[in-house]
Length: 390
Image (cartoon, rainbow, N blue to C red; front, side, top):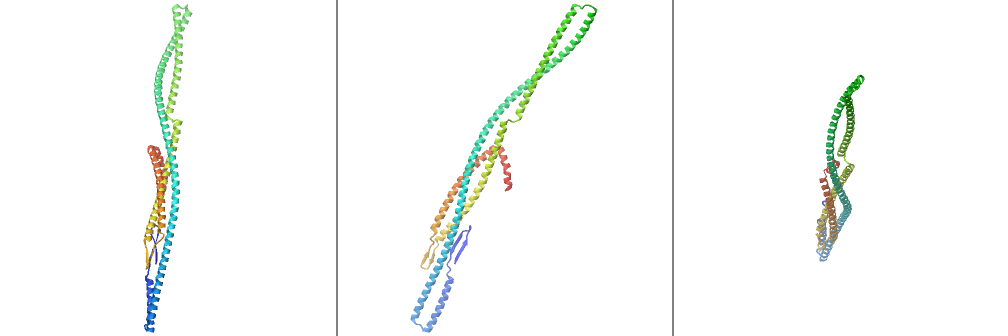
């Protein structure tokens, strides 16, 4: 009787069980018939010795024939079990070869992607460091310029206050001069009327003529001072306007960033986005790596079970009366399984190197994200759709 049982993982386990009872029962029936015939013949021949010897020889020959047929049936069943076993092992080896080929291609792709990703990450980090240094130098220059502008602004504010004070003083002086001019004009009109009256009445005395000359001279001096004061007021107004324009320009420079700072900010944002995308690619590769490791472990367990069952079946022997049967294909299967296991170990070592490269890249990206809070915010913003999909 041939019993084929399926173990875990689809591995067939073939057992050869020799069931001898039915044939023994048949032999007993045949023996019974022969005994009956012998008894009949004994009754007919009245116990002749020659017929007894022939019957015993015939019975012995039949027993040997039955034993030979039983051994042939057991050998055929064992051959069928071995063939099925070899087919199962060949199928597993083909599946394992396909998985190993797929794993080797995937490891090669992952190693290439990891090297490219590491190169890109190193270039990105170097570019980020260069941009950080440039940004730092630009920031220091901007701070120095801001300090100079603040000092200049303070000096200009003090100068503006001083000039405004001088302007107010000059305006007060102009107002006083205007009042004096008005008074002088009134006095002049008065003296003119008086002079006209005197000229009409009599010749003017010398003192009045001298006083009129002095009055005219003072009037000319006052007009000259008034003109000079007006010119000075105009110049002070122009100076105050220039100071206000300089203050407004300084304030505009302090509020609005320069083109260099805007360009640096844009480049830093682009580098941050690239780094976040690379980190998401690393995470997807890590998930694929975990899936491949699980498949490798399943195939390894399957091969271990196949090897153990092969060893157990190779150690089993069937004793058939005077002969013995032993499986002859176990060394080949053991060698094949050892070769496959060696290839699995080599693939695991290559996969481990790729995993270490991915871990180093992930660590570098993690350090950059930890140092840059803005990049962390962008990572969360880009990672939300991925989390929603899962």
